[in-house]
Length: 415
Image (cartoon, rainbow, N blue to C red; front, side, top):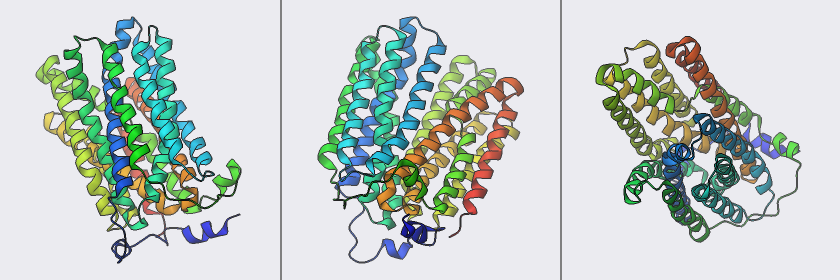
């Protein structure tokens, strides 16, 4: 097997230092490829968030139950999660990865816009699953292209910039959906068809802005063999990510908790407005801190920074479990949620890029995305069930323990 992989990446011994990042002759990290991938992330998430905002309205217009929404999202997320690992494995064997990324963005754009043509719930399931299939295909490829476009000392800034751009799309998307609903007199199908424009623009950004570096011939390895060459430090890192991820519930549960709790104090209508405003606060802080977290990652121990992000999630959980839940408490919760997500996503990607040989980046990012996807599927279901059976403090207490456990496991990674 490839002993150079294991030797050069055992523990974190080969992590680049800040001096490495500023060595003479290094190319600027914000190059054409980084900018193109960032623009694609903004445009694609803009498209996605428009669709996500109006999808419940569209399903209600078809006369289907809320259970269908859960089924559609669950199946689509499951498909996306497992396709990511397969895509990462497959693209590691290709001389050029960019065409696969372009294809993934095109399929996502067509699938998302196609929902507007649906007349039955199963049509929505088909189109949403196709969109998430494309998303699963493109994710590890995009990350591998991003990692290949910068020096190792700039991984943090590159991935932080990409996350910042993605989150800007998440801020613009819902606002665009509201505007389009007004302009089209609530013709949701027209709003969904509009998503084709930013979706295809995202594919164009990859096609025309991204410059892929040539790769040497890549030897064929079986799926299990390629998994086996991922270094032991990376596997310990993935364990920490998985433990944290099983507690990292969807933040729509925070919106629900805020809406229910604040309704008692402010009335149902005002509570809905406040909860939505808190979620916008979360997204703004996410966007603001994503690049900053990546910038810090290139100047300090990534292990400590990621563990700090996980610990901030634990602090958020402690507020949910022990503090009286007033509006200021919820403001702190949503602020911490935005900051820790920014640190988590920027640092997980950049740390994974350092722990895995560039030749195996596709597989490494695919495994990371799949583990995160499985965590998403488990965490929200378990937290929702615990909330229903035993109350919110027990549910969020479960998550809080896993947040701190994940932080402890990250700190145990050897430098």
